[in-house]
Length: 64
Image (spheres, rainbow, N blue to C red):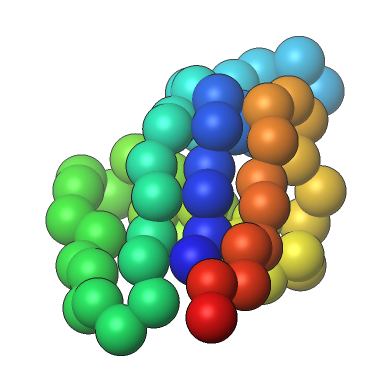
């Protein structure tokens, strides 16, 4: 399970992803829907650790 708590991303002080809270549970299918520039790809890059978060907490929790 991915847990996203208040995660933000900024470039040069400009917010690209505003604080988001969500839990992505194992075995579920999710869709990210939004306008161009709304932060969909940025969120995925943060979850994949391709970029560092600017604030908040991102956790991978093993639930077995």
